[in-house]
Length: 115
Image: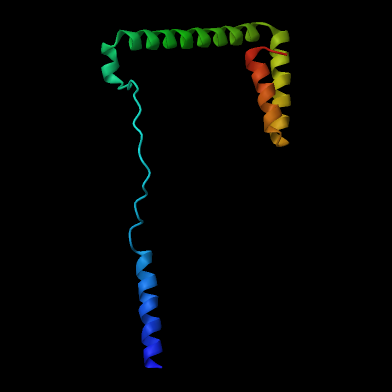
């Protein structure tokens, strides 16, 4: 009986010890790919990256100006403001009903001016 108990105790300790052992390394090979790295600060020396960054910034500024113009037009035109407020009410009702996808479509229509 003592021998059985000691054998059981031995296997229990061994099984418990494996829980604290580090996981075995997998033999997955890491593949390095060739690509140009965007290093942030050092990209200022690359003329191509500077041009891309300037073009992206210009597009962003134009988009923001377009949206600002839409807001100003809406504020100056009572009909457009009424239509905007109606769409916002519809979007809010859809959100409250849990219809988020439909609300996103209405939201896109509000800010893109599509029907």
